Image 1: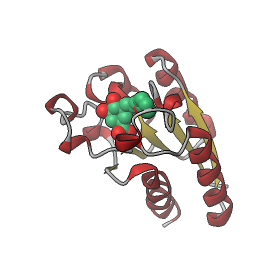
Image 2 (image 1 turned 120 degrees about the horizontal axis):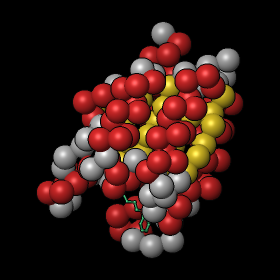
Image 3 (image 1 turned 180 degrees about the vertical axis):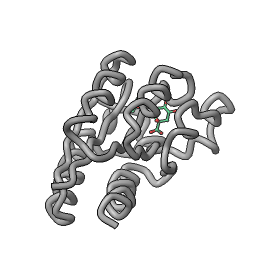
Image 4 (image 1 turned 45 degrees about the horizontal axis):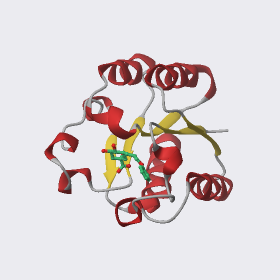
Length: 145
Ligand code: CA2
């Protein structure tokens, strides 16, 4: 069965608790439920994880090699800085979609640069947490043809 890891980076465990104008009211648990329900609908396995630690995210990406077929990655602020995450994505050579809840290009200039976009299949940003199912559908289409 096709399997996708939805991986979340630093501070996304706070989703739904603060800054609702930017990130909305839904929690990461809500997002996980939505993604798992969509997985059932699409007939794919959806795994879900979050870490605040860059190395743990690198490990999670490496672990995808034997377990998953693709990655939906909201790398949080590491998106803008992490060569380690970029190298991990390139290293596992699995299709990865970069995801952001907010429209990073309409925010501060330091959020406009992505270290990981060049090694990702595509980017979904600015659709709130609705971006997660959008990215999952797009990646499933790519994987199952
Ligand atoms: O828009 C996104 O999904 C981001 O990846 C979220 C990151 C931010 O650094 C990126 O530039 C864009 C931050 C996640 C912080 O999430 C919070 C949620 C609620 C309250 C506080 C932080």
